[in-house]
Length: 276
Image 1 (cartoon, rainbow, N blue to C red):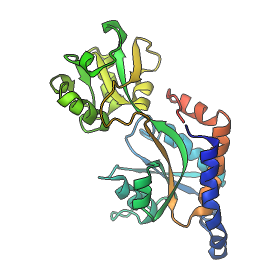
Image 2: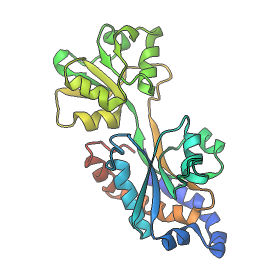
Image 3: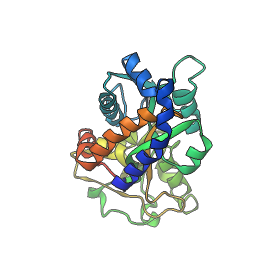
């Protein structure tokens, strides 16, 4: 759970670095002088961003408001690794000329990733993502084991964590019945809606946003699969190392949202259940 203690702890960790920055003209002052907060968000990543709309776009606007300036959105393509994305979007900029932004969203709060990228500060956990299965309940009871999925046609994005998990489950027992040509979990869920498959696998956010208002389709955890992240993973924000006072302002707003219903309401607007 993204607890108040975790958020406050992150804020405290940021605090010691803020004082010396003000003497040189801090990141917060620079952003306010520029008159905008540039926020990097992944493009073509529904329900977080698609054509300038989504959860991360709304959250970016909230963060810009916390700083007291308008939002300037920087949609970025996903690179070969999150480390590449942090370099391009946060601390150096892309060789084609875009970036860096003032802050990047949807950064996994993963210790090895953070340690491998000392040029950035990661803070502000705001969502826990998980891999799930959507099942057509009119086709029978929800399967609870991989064995129960044998012979069932399942839609999943082949080049994705859900696709890898299902393809490798039980020594490849499901490979022959996986439909893997889909771009993401949203496309897989739409295939389920069309009746072409009996199940779709994807991220919880993708399945929930696509199947909202369709009680026929049950969204449940994947059956036990080795190497599957059973507790999911948390995403947050990243700024360039040294931009601590800017991070502190945004962190305080995230704490306020977490203490109330702000995050839940923001995610609910996009038919996604907020998980902390």
